[in-house]
Image (cartoon, rainbow, N blue to C red):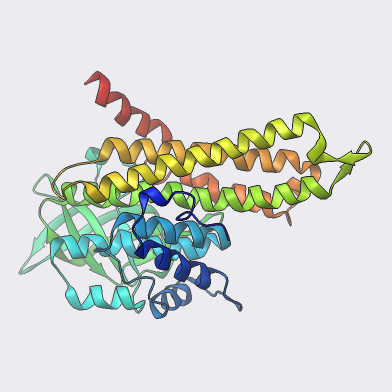
Length: 351
């Protein structure tokens, strides 16, 4: 599997080489992967969840690049532990649960999106009410990664008109069908909950600013796998008496794909580095948006070209590149859809 650390060494410290190598070794393991619970346990046993909530963003990035190159579901299992674990770490709550999350013994998910409130967080309708010394949460969250396997959920709900963060144990769930992902709904009907943070909006934004640029490196891993597969095809496939790789129009397309891959890696890594060197109480929403949008859109173009260059083989159900395209397509939507991120970027300049 290709390295991110070696060609882009300026973004990294010496220890990132080891972090990437560990992820590459895990990603190349033999044997059945199993469901999300099995994958999370394997990640925990391999020590790849040790940085949940506390490691730097570049560590998440290099691990995601390796995991996504080999298996999109491994990448999903990995990053959702971060999405759920970081709020626990930042809130200073549930230390025993957080230890289990890092060990791979518990799956914790991040419950924000609703049918009527995706990127428009202010439209959130999930409500929390006090119940003696605790709380109860009522509402529906959907398109929640790893929800079908959730042992616990960090859920955002309105309390006294303001967004707060809660922990729900053993939430009721329903599965949703999304290619290459384990996705579902959290069905919260007066579910018992514990308050994590009264300022839940700030906690959610901090979590997304940390994880969002790493989506770009997951997209890079998927696209780079498709690119490598396609280059091999172009070298071996003969048309009109010579390999496709010798056709000028094909060479032009390959050059465009290579440029997109470089652009994706550089933009996403710059956003990750920016988050790492910026004080925790300062926002990096603009650069996170730039890195995620640039990388996921560029990688979408790469995988579309992979399908095109493989012709009919590229759209067969058994084709690797069509599977990679389907797995990568949701990355341009979740954790900030492209058009929403454009609004974030424009506001930086237009006010």
